[in-house]
Length: 252
Image (cartoon, rainbow, N blue to C red; front, side, top):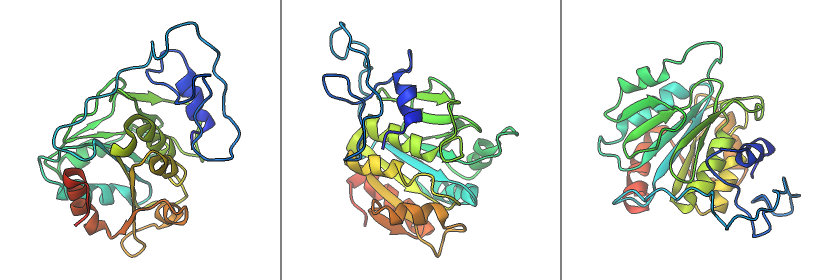
């Protein structure tokens, strides 16, 4: 589902990306039966004149980007996944973790000590790269654009949180379609349960952490209840599943 907050971002000047729609400029809304979110003004410019070129596909991968989302208990869960992924992991990773907006985040520094992958706090205009983990900074929504660049926005809270997993998943779905994986990890609330619908609508793959291994089962439970989870896995099963999915397009 393309939320109103995301529609406003995509329609704003210089956003660096676009709303999927038909030739009349009708905003994309992947949930059948929903009313249109926003009507874009007609333009006399040639079609796609301001649309950034798609990012090149990463070599030797079935998927280009893995989006992880977590809340309570998430730093340990994300750390375990990154620790178990191989140094040559060929896809990019983007992470939304709900953090206290009043304090500077040390999450990138903490996770960097646990993995062979490069871990950075996401910055406006960065481009995703294979084997690099981009962490959303506190109090900023993280979006991945069609050309692989990152955008940060302080637009309204979504389901009372910022950064929002729903917005991250929706942007990844619109930009990378079937070459995107969404992973919903431990956390309270339901953030991510709408965004994974966009991932599935565009042909991507969704993984949810199972109840036994999740410290807090709210977010994974909402994802599972939505019916969009392709795999429900224990935490220790997620890294090997990502490795084989990205490399070969299957879970072994």
